Length: 623
View 1 (cartoon, one colour):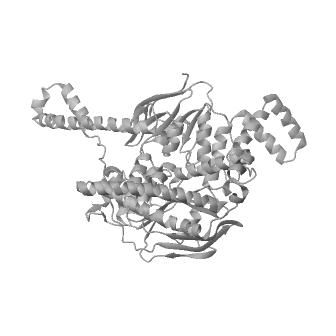
View 2 (cartoon, rainbow, N blue to C red; view 1 turned 180 degrees about the vertical axis):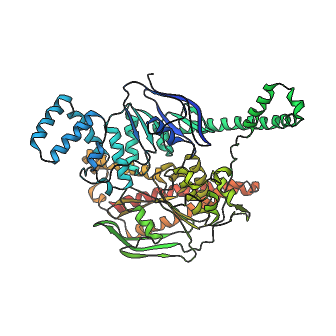
């Protein structure tokens, strides 16, 4: 394979903080590589170096001559007065600049200049390029070319930046969190685009489904070194676990040997002076090896949330619109105790507005929320929290509480709690201003959880968090003894945490689906397939399902059954969660374990049957 990029013995540090040292790897033609590391380990810095936006201490970065390289930044920025079209064609690529000049001449209604540019366009064969560019813009739902950058949402701005990169037809593309702020439809489109293309990729992402479906190789930065894994995310997890086990064994051996060497080093200086210098040098190498942090064991953080009563909240006749666009219209919903609800939908359909109304930040146009007296919200917003950069990490959390109580009555200190969320003791005493963007989001999450809420409302909690932190958060939420609402575009995260989803389709159309995101997508694909078959084979469709039957609505008894099924499925999901907790506790006697396992099988079978019946009635209800 042709080498596109070679990194040789690259090192980078900020003062005393060494991000990586002597790392070596390459990207060849056709390779699609995912880059993984904890927040603060230098992922974004490495991409900045490769994009020429930042220098490095030592080593070499070599691109193939004439290689077209595209770079999508984590937080792209353009002048606010620039139009969307100008931003989309904001590039040094000569053909892209020519197209931008032609579009500007058309908007300025300058016939003479337009004629001149048409001739240049024909000479440069730019028409086909323009067609491809506008096709990408259309697929990314970018159609208001004259809109100002300053008026765009985060998701819209990310799509414009993505278009700006893809339009140049790069041979190698550097992507820093490409799925952040994109809705699910755009994420799935980008997955397909990158899979079909021959573009070589070096990508930082926390989206594990995206990583699995796009990349066939993973690089990990860990302890200032880079490790390579020739496989997908599942393979990476397996091999990383093996590597950590081996490393921990080496650290244990180093510690044992260090104690013996330390005794020798502490002898009288004159006795040591006659010893071989190589042994002294070897001692310091051994000491450095022994000081390496061992990977923390699998710690289950079973936090005791504040008591929550049976009444959680009820949405009564909620109506809301912005700029004449309805987001909710006479929306009613009763939230159950211990419910874990996911909210999905395209950007602009009202997901964040809904939870802001729930926590009291935005008022509905009509209707109201009736919230239980025992509910204590913990709200994690997309906007984040403004920290004092001159405050230390541990002080930020300690200002909220000195300790947090676990389910068994034991307590965790602030330092122990921060350590669980991957803030090592040295990072706990760092100033906030020295944290990476991902570390600040993780600290914000800790401030929310440390308040001991019983109802967590999380708006895009996965943005900017590394995969290791996401694993910790997923386990925390699975064991959380309270209620949860999550707005997220991270499909892997949603599947692991929520038990059903609200789908915001736009134009005040909200669907309650009893399952996780993957189950919803499978159901939706079946619906779309059935519609296509009916359109393609109308006669066949009529023969199988007569028109009279198609128009048949639910009977009164079926409607009552449909409503009851939602309650029954919710109860079964709650029982399933309790059974999982009991079966995983390791504390059940053999007879009770057998009984609980049998009941789990019955519950799973009942959920399958009732879900299928719910889907059948739901389809007829929507016809």
